[in-house]
Length: 156
Image (cartoon, rainbow, N blue to C red; front, side, top):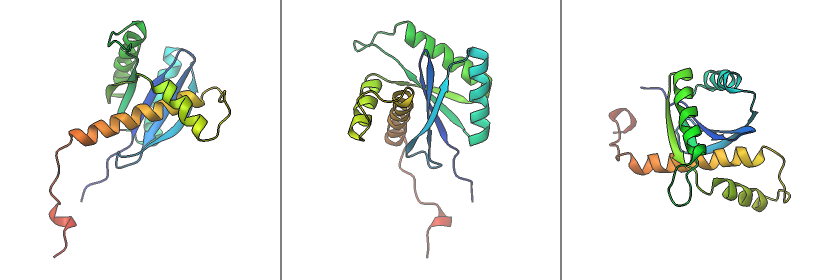
């Protein structure tokens, strides 16, 4: 019998805040997990390392802000560099996930959930991280080959 996979951390990198989301242990559902106010590269990495250790994270996905025409601007380069440093700091695989439209989708989702027109600072970042992670989890599920049931899980 093997242990279930650890959670995956979703990150929405902003200039003022870092939105966070985590998956369930089966890596199927994304949940909002808070916001970190940016405090500088070293402090941000230290806080993210602590979250990784505290939650038993085994993989991280960072939103990649690509322009609608597919071009990668300075924000995408910064996200790629952040992901590289985060991988070095945690020793984990850090994937990049296209995040086009996530902030607008996050604002729409918050409005649909009954939040006021201008959500509290950080709520959009947290919801955007949740959407980034959710998209990543869905993509992973589509790419995984179907598995045969193991002998230990089949009853005779």
